[in-house]
Image (cartoon, rainbow, N blue to C red):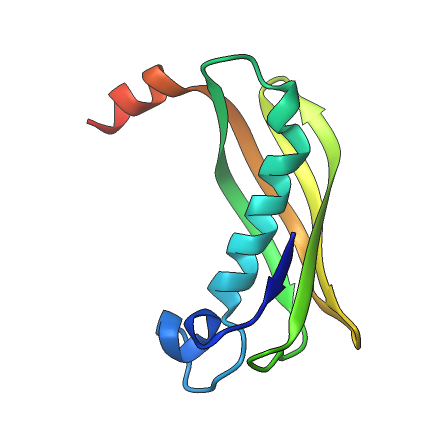
Amino acid sequence: MDLEVTEADTALAWRSGDVAVVATPRVLALMEEATCLVVADALEPGQTTVGVRVQIDHLAPVAVAGHIRAEATLEKVEGHRLVFAVSVRNDRGLVAAGRVHRVIVEIERFLERSR
């Protein structure tokens, strides 16, 4: 997953900080998007994955107009539980890294629980 950082991606816009660099929540969203792509073709119709745990370190700032790329690797499968190693890099190196845990759910059943 590639992203060119815009004003809308900054900590100021996400209200997670006071500087115009890519926001940690935006970095996490990009990481989660990458995890979804890894398993999208393996899911049955009517299934999706939902995030249940996140452990990330945001290591370097990226200014507006900077380019970043998120990658995810499925490390572990335990029944319906999935664990991904995730990273975000730019041309200078590692921007963020960690683990994202997701669970495979039946969409309709999951939505029923939310009501």
